[in-house]
Image (cartoon, rainbow, N blue to C red):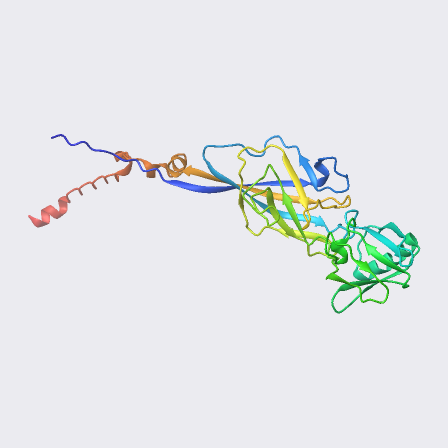
Amino acid sequence: MVRKKYFIKYIYMSLIKQTKLISLNSNDGVIEHNQSAGYLSDLKFNFKQILREEKDVLYNAISVHSVDMTNSFYNVNELNNKIDVRITIVSGGNQTNSTITIPVGNYSASTFVIQFNALLLAGTGKAGILAIDRNNGLYSLSPDANTYTITILPTSTSYRLLGLTPNTTPVFTFGSPNFFNKGCNFLGITHLNIFSKALVSDNMDSKSKSQNNLISVIPVIAPSYSIITYESRNEESILRNKNIGDIDITITGNDGVLANFNFIEWNITFSIHSYRIIQLDKILAITDFKDLLNVKKDDKKDKPKKKKPLPSPKPDKDLELLMS
């Protein structure tokens, strides 16, 4: 019976992480979808090649390395600054509709009151008193006389700001408490959502309730006109695209609406991590440790050299005579 000998070659595999930084400045982006130039929140960056599919790459992941932005957003903007009101004369029932447009800017509950009361009188010819209760944060509104009522119409865009339930038609009469049913909200944007189709992952949010293009969420804790900074927390999301050229970036506020940076540029740096499989035997074979991989070693090199024997001492003739 002939026994066959099988020799198994062990290949030692290892996973290494390679990182590539992608730095984006909003000034280098191309405005998408006919967006207003000042928004800077829907941009495309034309790269030639960022990532390509490679057989030895197990998967790629992305994380936000750093963010530098300015809190240049207005809490009262063109999307929430219109208040449609109706003045109804009590005696005859005549009605007049008007629109109050609050100038965009950053307001507190108190400064908004001053602006609203002045514009209501200028726009309708009737005085109303908007006031804030410091104990509960609720607005109240009352006509200045019992001859008319004030109605805020659901076509207004400022319901959330004022603290009113959407799609309702509250009527305010003279002499009543007339409190709004929710606290007013002048916080503005409290966090930024960064989305990208090119850098899509498996992230989710409660608005879509499914996987979407969300990359990261940046908290906005800096005061108005101050710098928003964010540094990596070692959070990674697996990239679904293996080939990436251009990068699209969309930035929204917590309400899902595109953020308006008001022409102030921003910088975002992403880290793309490639987890690559390597064969250690091949790596070692091209290094100074290649002799560790040799199955047969050179005996001549490995065996220590034999020392030559020392020559025998010559006999001493004088000593021989004495001994004879």
